[in-house]
Length: 277
Image 1 (cartoon, rainbow, N blue to C red):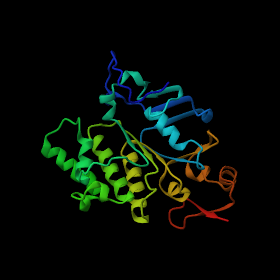
Image 2 (cartoon, rainbow, N blue to C red):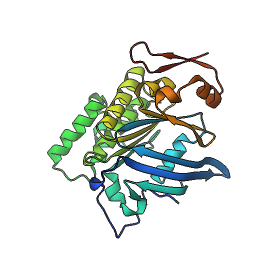
Image 3 (cartoon, helix red, strand yellow):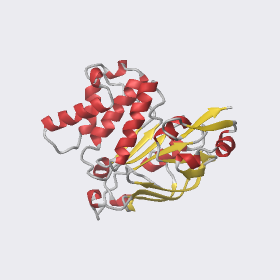
Image 4 (cartoon, rainbow, N blue to C red):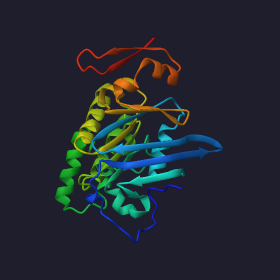
């Protein structure tokens, strides 16, 4: 059973900062069964430093379930290594500096200001208050939420809350050094077109700076535009794992999504553009 954020301490604590290999997360033969239904079936996948992976697939095919299995939110069977070692090597406190998760939604209902929510990501960081404040400001600027700093969090729109929590995750990972994994579960679902593109551009930039970034997306064209790699799930299995130009072919999309499409090339970027037939 996998449990990423288990509180079980390790007697053989190592330093994630010392890890240097390119693969940060390795999954072998991962399966998840919920209410008697096999949601994920024998998934094997390696996630790499410096790579932005888009996780695609129809509704109910296991995309969010895969992320929840990685974080230990739900039980799973299989082998899972993080930064080259079994999960139990890493303490929860140590792992929190290197593993950030942006869920689809948050149940936070306290009347915190937006800035106070972002500041929650700084709990456990070892830095002077002045430095932490600068980090918070920088991350709020990156996610375009500085103007919301003193707004009460419950009064914000869904898209504004998503961007606030992305700033919180970035703050949490401030002391990750060269080893960070960022899991984004539908990070653009409530965003307008400007913030869809700015959020995914930031995700790609973080990956190209050395992070391992995985985002669950539904918009195939956004995935084609920003992702380095696309993994498409279908019926709990990996249908294809390839760069966008190889993964987003008409025959693959039609088989997985049961809908005819035409593929054209973007006039300036060159990546695939999917047009519904």
